Amino acid sequence: MTSSADDLRFLTEALSQLQDYLLSNELYWPLSGSLPRLTPGSLLLTLTRMEVVQPLQAQRLRAQVDLVRGKWRTAWEKKIARETANRLRLWSQFLSDYATAPEQNVDSYPTEARGRAILQLLLREMPDAPEKSALAEMDAMLKAQLHFDEFLWGAEFQTAFPEADFWFLYAKL
Image (cartoon, rainbow, N blue to C red; front, side, top):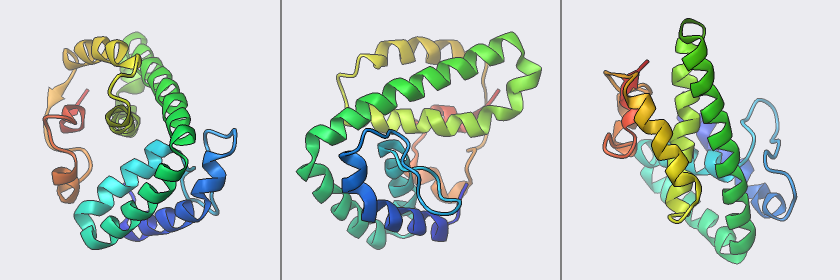
């Protein structure tokens, strides 16, 4: 997990480029240095983490995101749809790799669960997404493999990712 300073740096730079990103053809928009690439999902994930660590700042940043998102609603929705399809493909590939070689992929679960968390956030933006049924099937198979345990990302983020919606973050393979 990143620090709140890293999250703030990411959000600040992402906001300065959000309009250009939304109007581009790129799905994974490069930011400076070692910052993660900008996508709607990475933006939503970072905002969600910030809400528990720095709620007032997160509220201000979310308002700025909402302004740009509102102005470019169609572009935002297209990016969400593309990222959802891509993240679902990546998640499916991880689950397939785990099924064929569990011992080689078990340690990747915490990292891969980040992508699943992003999928959850993206699907909140698209309640009628066609990917929901495929994800539900994958989730059913995954639940049979999980050992429910402590939260993967540290106690400070638990309230941002409630177990009812983010159950996969409360488990290990």
